[in-house]
Length: 251
Ligand code: 13P
Image 1 (cartoon, rainbow, N blue to C red):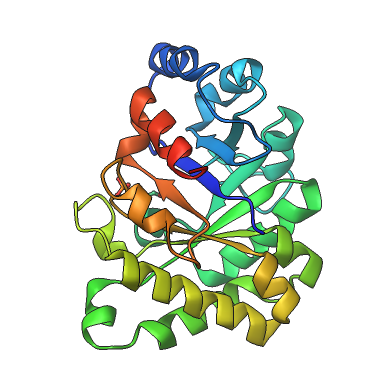
Image 2: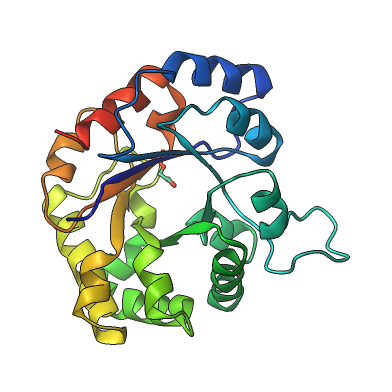
């Protein structure tokens, strides 16, 4: 049995005061970490204050990291630095970073290796654009992305990895993939992992769906066998909605 994981990706939202209000509002309302991993991935400046107030049922993650520990990389933050402030998760390869900040499968692969080396749990984002789905090339696309992104990772690392399947056309658009399409595609990714590693690894890895997940569609998504959780943008910004979304995973 895989433990579900519900993660909020706050993107570039929330000042310190707003982040503090959120954390106070969700305190004591999240289900036990024995049943679900609840994670908030915030921008860098509020990470430490969230870590200090997270409570026992919430984990904190970043949205990006550099693959070197330190160096002349103006404006960057390393995985080692995140670890040093007790951050536990890091999103890697989000489609917004791939599209707007020139992240490639090569740098994403380096980041995954570094995240494991320093002891962070990565949430790797993969997913296709609308043209790729319309051209019936989703499997080809994901096969390439997953193979390049996971290159060189050990079986033990991949069992700990979280993959978020986020079709680009469903992000922030209000268009959710139907639960069946999301399940089928997450199932395809699981088969890819089996092909690259083995059945045991494929059964252990947690695969989330992301893209316009909200309180009204989470139940159906979570009822699907290949969907182990969700990576949620907009709806994770509201404390009440986040609590509802996490609770949906333990029903
Ligand atoms: P929305 O939930 O706002 O569509 O964002 C999805 C996402 O990009 C999460 O990483």
